[in-house]
Length: 518
Ligand code: ADP
Ligand code: ZN
Image 1 (tube, rainbow, N blue to C red):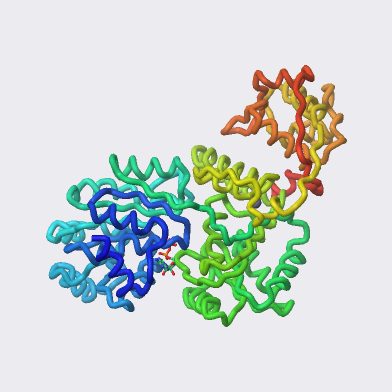
Image 2 (cartoon, rainbow, N blue to C red):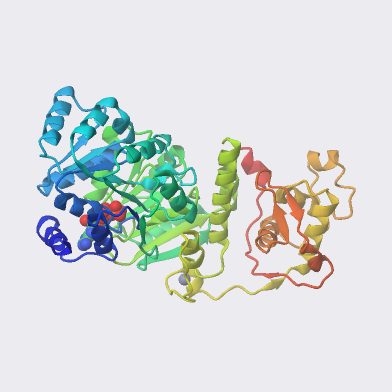
C-alpha cells in the first residue's frame, strides 16, 4: 500500500520523498486507524490526508474553519488535477447542485466544508447516500476551549463522527499542548487512536527576545539588517498596523498593511504583492498568515506582544518554510503585558483563568534565561534537553550574573502577610516602594512596617522576583484574582534557611496602572 502512496506523492504532488511522520500517518490512515496528527505549521499536514484520499475508493471529507483556507486548498488540488470541491453557504444553487451531482457519482475525491455546512440536513442526506472513507478534521484544536482558537461549531463534529462509524477519522493540528490533545481525543471519541507528534523544534529559526525600548528604531534597525528580504511584522491592533505601516513607508521601506479592517480587495492585493515579492514587508495583525504558503519569509518581528505561546509559535512558524535560516525577533515590553491583561479582563471568568495562564507562560518564555527552545518546546509537551542550541539569544550570550535577592524576597513575603494575603503583586510592590496611591492610603497600608522599604529594586525587578517566588512554589497565586498567598515553604526564606538567586534583568520602570487605564 505505501508503495502506492509514494507513487502518488511522486507523480501527483511532485515530491520525491515523505517528510518525517507523513509516511507513518498515511499508513495508519490506510489501515483505517483513527489518527491524531500534530505537526508544526509548515510541517506538511495536508499531504497526510490528501494522499490517502486518492487511494480510498470513496470520499474524503475535510472539515476546516475558514472558507479562504479551503478555497486555496481546493484550487491547489484542482491545479494538480485532483478532483476536489468545496461546499459552503456562499456558492450558488447551480454550483451546489453541480457539486452534489459529482459527489453522488463518485467524481469527487476530496470534499471540503465548514462545520456549519456539515450540520445542514441536506449535507447529512448527502453523506448518508455516499461512501465516506475518511473524515478529516483540520485545525482540530478549534474543538477545545483550551486551544487558542476555540470554535463552538466544532463541538458538533462529535455527533457527525458518531454518525459515521465506518469512516476513519484523522484530526490535524499544529497545537500540541497536552490539554488540547486530550480534548480532541475525548470530544471526537478517538478512544484507541494513534498519535503522531512531529517535533516542534524548528531548527532553522533563530529566536530572540529583546526588551521593547524604542520599538520604531528597533524595527528600523532590523529592516536595515534584512535588506531586501521578506519579513512579517506583527502588531496587536489595526490602528498600530496602520500607524507603523505609514512610518515605515515614510522611512523608505517597502511595506503593505494587512488587517481585518481593510476591504477584501485590499487584503488580497497586499497579500499577493507580498507573496510575489513585490512588497518586502507586511505589517499585520493576527488576521494575516492562516494558510499562507510563502516559503522565503526570512524574518518575523513581534512589534507587540502575542496573545500566548501558541500564537507566537504559529506566527514565527511562517518564517523559513524553505528550511533556510530565518530570524524571529520578539520586542517584549512590560507595558504590553498590562495591555493584554486589560483585554483579558473583559472576558468571562473561566476564559480569564485560561488566558491568564497562557499569558504567564508567555512571559515566562520571554523572561527565561535558558535556551529559548526549552520553555517553548516544554509548552508543547516536548522534552528538550540540549544545553546550547546556538540558535537563540540566550545560548549565544553570556548569562547575566546571579543576584542574591533573599532579603527583597523576605520583604515581599512579609508584605504579603501584613496586607492579609489579599493583594496582587503589583499592589504589593507599590506598598513596598512607598507609593502614595489613593488605595494604599485608604487602606492605611502606608502605616505598616513593610511600607516604603523596597527602593532597592525597580518595579519590573520586583515583578520578576514575584514570578520567581510563584515558580518556586513559595508563593501561591490565586488563579482567578491574582492575589498572592504564602505557601508553607515560604517560611524557609523568612527564617533565612534558604537563599534565592535570580538573574535580574534591568528594565526601565513603568507604571502598570497607567498602562492598564489606557
Ligand atoms: P501545514 O498544513 O502543516 O502548515 P502544508 O501541508 O501546507 O503544511 O505544507 C507545507 C509546505 O510543505 C507546502 O508547501 C507543501 O507543498 C510542502 N510539502 C509537504 N510535504 C512535502 C514533501 N513530502 N516534500 C516536499 N515538500 C512538501
Ligand atoms: Zn538556545
